[in-house]
Length: 188
Image (cartoon, rainbow, N blue to C red; front, side, top):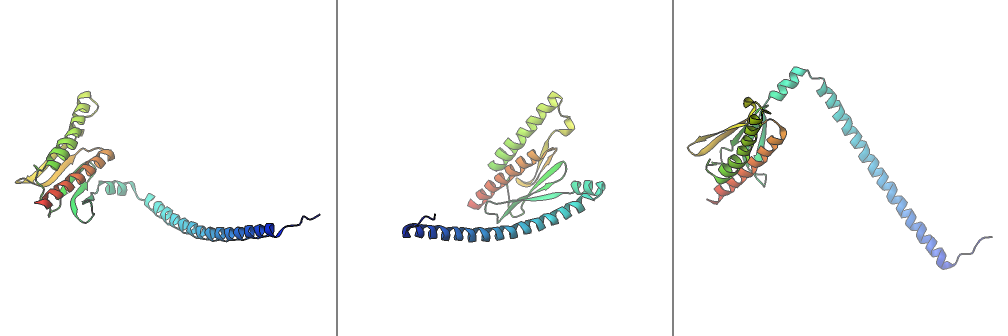
């Protein structure tokens, strides 16, 4: 026996059907969109895999040679418009070369007090302790040299930075120091 439906209940059933139809249309549209995005991602992955395969077939000599090459990392101002300095990174050495347009004085507090006085000096102290404990040879100890012309920095050479963590610390400290020095020069 069929139950009779009141006009009010019928209206609710129709509204539910309309809402469900809208939801279905929305889901179909989203599935189509996601399917396209998924297809694009799969194609990109195929290209990456192809490049990885080609890169993995390089000879060991080519890989060692590539590692020995120098990488240049620009240190940009906060706004990204000015190159403050460049880090020239090799396997065991970092050269920080200030931009030719930026005359940074060795005695500038961000350089003398922070970069050299705090960051590099603390790394030297840490290495000295490791050498004293016998956990690091004297040849592996971090060293740095600041080359100046008058009081203007030409470059800071850091040898034996040893690992990526230290490279990151030096890069961030140098970027901050040169940014502050740049701001000081701009005020004068």
